[in-house]
Length: 462
Image (tube, rainbow, N blue to C red; front, top):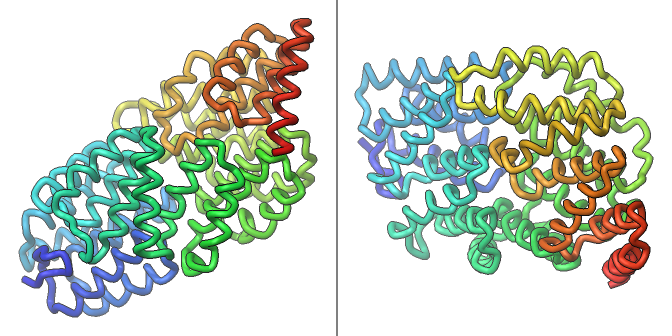
């Protein structure tokens, strides 16, 4: 037995192996490019270390790509064999059980095991971060917040990874609507480690949700050099930067950032990178921008992912890319195979059935000009879309689709109601006021339409 930097026992050949493990997890918490190198060093120091094999399996599962599912299973088998040969602590056995559940598609079972670990070992940062991930893709901001809050009693300033834990808490606070407290904890985390891109991202979310676009641009500009060592998660933070510019209707700047940052690495078919691209292109088109041939590379990569069905959030963006590029047959094939993923043998199965299928059918219908059909598919599930996970900012794409479909279908009463609701909660959104003016004008309410258009102009001039 060897103890790590948080005082937890590890079954390992040497303290050196545990040190490399700690470095791997710390790097993972802040999305560092050298995370994989640290893991390689851990496995070199002790190829039979149960937690090193678990960590390797977790990383393959985080790709949400069936192409590497076999490697995750290999890591699981190696972790089991090592535990059988060399023994393992209760905590390590729970990690192995969590990986096994995840490999079977049981994300709830995996999360329950991580939460069990945290009751006994609140400084197990790997369990803390992975539970954070799955709560996020369950669409449960409250669970993200509370999962970290339950562990905070065990953390003090000066402990390794303390700032990283504050950053996790900040994002949970933001997704559960406590923006002031989220910004406070996020700024504390960034002050502790400016390279902690997850914490930078948490504060960026606060500014997005509060309509503080200029503040958001300034925040990210001031920290860009600090998170230059981050991996491809940096593209998502640039997506946030682009979103601020989009909402200020600085559209040329958004296109520039799309080409140089969001899709600067066009070799990537990582689901988050692809989602960033598809979501931004759709928003650009909704603002009247001709995006040229940019959909094509996303669609080509999505066509290779039509049978993934591991995560509804990812699949919805793959369908979006296919539909927007006019690859309707490929999108239809994806929907057909998706129907086979709707049973209850996995955590995502019921979500595909209840939300994923109608949402993806609506995306395809909207792209094919069947606007009324898109409205009829999205409207009944609009409050259930959070079940696909992602953030409020990411899922807002689908609320914008509903508004756009309502306007194009000539259902102006519905559009007016949706936009009345939206401008009440997002009064700083010029796009929303412009669409509101469009709906009101269509209903011959010229006075209110003029007032809405004036509000949009005022916001853009500020």
